[in-house]
Structure formats: C-alpha cells, structure tokens
Image (cartoon, rainbow, N blue to C red; front, side, top):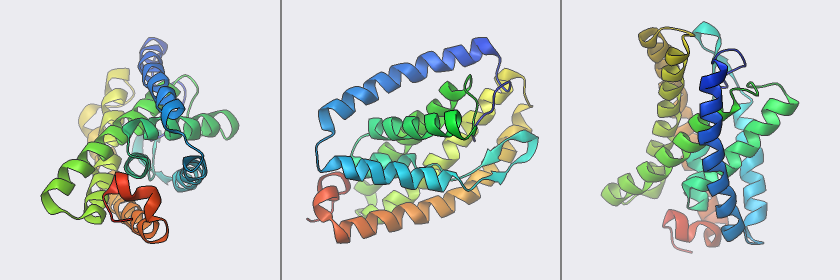
Length: 212
C-alpha cells in the first residue's frame, strides 16, 4: 500500500500532501495536548510495533504491495484517530526517508490512506460496533479489518485517478489481498488490546472500555 514515486502525477500528489499536512497539524496538536509521561512509552512501542508489522510486505499485482496497517490499533489504544495520524506519519516518514519504502512525492497520499483513513475508520468502527456487541476485543478485530480494507480501496481509487491502473482490476487486486490481510490484522489488534488490558488496564481502561 506504500505508493512509490511516479505512480501519481505531481499536481495530484501535491493535493494529497496539502490534505495530509492539515491532518498532521491536527495530529501534532493532539500530541501536544495528550502526550503525557505515561503515554510516551506506549506511543513509542506502538510506533515500533506498527513499523515492524508494515515491514512484512506481500506483492500485489500492478506494482504495489499489501501489508498490515496498524491505524486502528493506534487509534483504539490511544483513544483518538489523530493518534493514528501522528504515529503512522512518523512511521511512513522514516520508511520513506531511510528505507525507501514509499515515495517522497506520494507520501501525502500514503499518510492519508494509512493514517487518516485507517485511523478514522478504525476508531469510529470500533466505537460503533462496540455499542452493539459490548465486546471491545471483537470490536477491535472488526475495526482493524475495515481499517485495513478501506485504505487499500482508497489507494486503488487514487491509482485510477492518477492513470496508473484501471479502476476495477485495481479495486479487486487491492481489495481481495487486503480483505485477507485484514483478518490477520484483526486478530493481531484484538490480541494486543486484550494483552494490554490484562497487563496494563490503567493505560487502556478509558479508551477501550475495560475495567482498570
């Protein structure tokens, strides 16, 4: 899902960068207001974990790749979709600048897809589904699945508007792969939140809805 350089025309890439920078500014404001001493180690661990999860790439047709995202996990654990934007932006910047994973011109689109869309879809799906089933771990798994699938479809749509590959084959390629990958992401997300709720319920009681 890391879009490389030259896959999006510069004018479109610049528009995605502008949108991404707006959300990144809001995410930085969230970090300034919410980043207390007890949350800094958790943010660092989440960032490192998401970096590792995204390092496992599966090739998808037409030159792109599929992998776990991590936006839902960050948003649910830290209680804000802007937490996902903040953490995913850090991860994507390091991946792009140091490891060459994802282009620099297309980084705005990557931040929108994985950080913004992934974070907001994950956060609001979790809270909406949890109101129905009253099970935060199942809800986290479902939210993570959607937060993996929907960004991949957004990526395919962006590639269509960029003229990189046709819409329906792109949606099928990205959607099918990430629907399967999303099952893994859902399980990982549910397990991590379950383990956190058992080991450090004080860190997630207010965001996940488990007793401290």
